[in-house]
Image 1: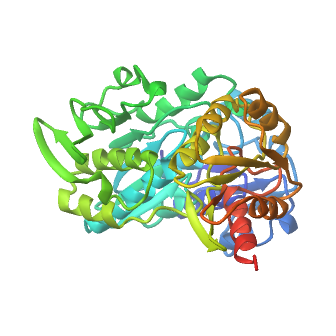
Image 2: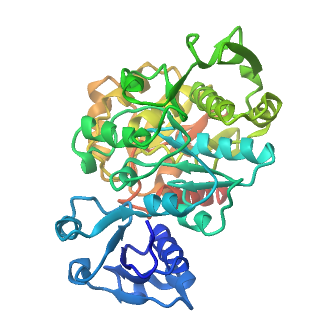
Amino acid sequence: MNYENKKVLVVGMARSGVAAAQLLRAYGAEVTVNDSKSEEELGSQLRPLEGLQLTRRFGCPAMDLLEGMDVLVISPGIPDTAPFVVRAKEAGIYVIGELELAAQLSKGTLTAVSGTNGKTTTVSLLGEIFANSGKVTHVVGNIGYPFSLAALVSKEDDVVVCEVSSFQMETADTFHPHVALLTNITEDHLNRHGTMEVYTAMKMRMFANQTANDYAVFNADDPGLEGLAAQVRSHVLQFSRKTEVKEGAFVRDGQIIIRMNGTERKVCGTEEIYIPGPHNLENALGAVCVAAAMKVPVPVIRHSLRTFRGVEHRIERVRELEGITYINDSKGTNTDSTIKAVQTMTAPTVIILGGYDKHTSFEPLSREMRQSPMIRKAILIGETADLIRTSLERNGFTNIEYAGSLGEAVQKARASAEGGWNVLLSPACASFDMFKDYEERGRVFKEIVNGLK
């Protein structure tokens, strides 16, 4: 779409909304920016907009600003069922999100990763693989760096690696990655989407505009993806750590193999992957498929798997004190992610759980904790503490304590742990009841841990 001289309302002045406004002005749009917060409350968030010619309407409802608009750009936090969004559609206003806007205006080859868990690690690994191959690489999207900022500077020979959330796909229209990877689907965000069917449909929209010249990559081990590969028009690759696949990446005799177009190539041994855990083996296998589809040489992939050190807040070793290892997994924002963290533990562990309620079941996690030989105690925080306790006790896990804050939880975990043990923050919940986001929660945890005497 040509946005020159179009009247565009951008609602939501978090990072993605501010970046969308910058991109639209660069393409000649008449931009109005809006947020329910006042300009004083937004503060330094608006600094990138200084010097740009646009209309600022803060502290007022977006509904009052729709008249005369051609386009409405909404942030991922705004559902497409919001009354002002519905009204805009009824009025014939073109409604999109920042991700869709950036995809329309960016240059380079677009690759995308979605799924309930593993997105950030896989996207970050792919960014390193492509950079190691000599490509100018932009790692964008739900990972925290707005796609629109990359769209301002990207060139035709660049590679864009985009982390895609189900929220962002609600407002996707022409989004078209050359290679798209779906890591897994488990219960999450039902407070937004209502049902697993809707949640799954949002994930699958990532493939909607692909053709036979593109690639779709699926996790063959994940039951939530069963049958979904048959719904795409693109060339399907699969990955598995349990069995050999027809085309894609798998493990044979401890070696990662990539099989494409009838040719097999060894990538590296599974023990050579730097980041630990079976879930990270899955992330690596998925990344191998994407990289191979993008024709990255195997030696580059091998080197990247051996040297990539993971991402902040995902099973991140913070410190060892008095023989106790403190691990930050604040990115464990749902039960499946925390189950993977539990499965990674190789020493007795005290786990800190709890946070914002996303209306998902804690039963699978409770069963995993009861069966795990490593999880010895749970410290519960946040608004879901009672829900988690009920689920744990129902499944026979009873070594539980409450804490009123993250700091208190760390102190109680420290008192409960012994030399050679772990203290693991992996909340299985979002952070919005106590923190701005999981990143702030993780930073606070690390500050608390590093401040222990």
